Amino acid sequence: MYKSLFFLLLTAAFFTSCNKAKVTQLEQSLAASQEKVKLLEEQLAYSQATGAGLLDRLEDLSVVNVEGAQSIRKSIENISDQYASIQNLNNKIQYKDSLNLALVMNLKRSLSDINDKDVQVEVKGGIVYVSISDKLLFSSGSSRVNSNAQNILGKIATVLNDHEELNVLVEGHTDNVPMKPTAEAKDNWDLSAKRATSIVRILQREHYVAPERLTAAGRASYVPRAPNTTAEGRAQNRRTEILILPRFDQFFKLMESPQAAN
Image 1 (cartoon, helix red, strand yellow):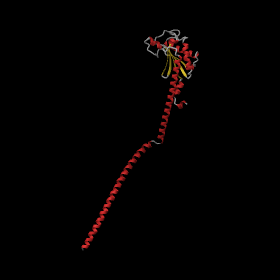
Image 2 (cartoon, helix red, strand yellow; image 1 turned 60 degrees about the vertical axis):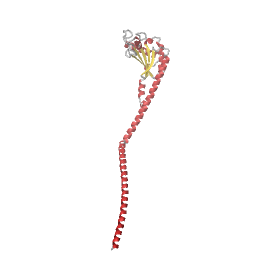
Image 3 (cartoon, one colour; image 1 turned 180 degrees about the vertical axis):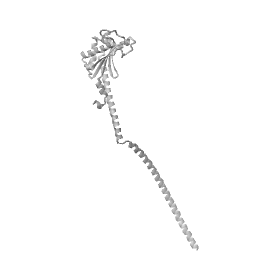
Image 4 (cartoon, one colour; image 1 turned 180 degrees about the horizontal axis):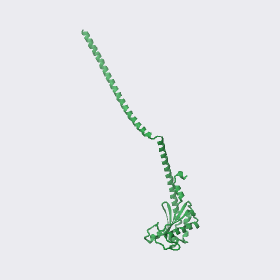
């Protein structure tokens, strides 16, 4: 009987020991499995976040379809063309500025023996102006050019004939003192226009400036250089101006794009 009881106790102890070992093994296995599950969950969360980001980027990129890409490419090409046009126009403007500078230097060199107060050469708004005092060209109230003025006009005409691509506008100007009507001119408008016409005729007939390049205009007293309140100011306003400017067809061609100009 005692032997049977001892055997049962020994058997129970053996199975208990085996069960503890299995429990420990199972616990370790469970812990490892839980660690793997945690790692997999972290990997899954990362994948989900990455996938969401990729989807967002794909949604953005989906906007740029083939048509959109062509439109962007066309816009870039247009910008490039506009930049090339601006560069081309800038080069032409620089060329025109250089031409104006050469004109001014040539005119000043030709007219160097004349008082600077009586003949002024300058550039305004991209146009070369030659302003000649009326006392060098005309008698008071007259539109007939003095014989002494032929030398001045001849020097200017020589420079003009060296630049046949440019037009010439001759403007007559007076002060604001009303003139008495005469057989030659009725008023300041009439006098200024006839003086400009006289200069144009001399440039054409005696110095061979092409007539299609020439224009005569009377401005009377309405574009003064100085206030008419003093004798000195009125003297500055009584003048003839010769404007040297590009031909209008060439000017508009200058403003065209390279493709249109060609």
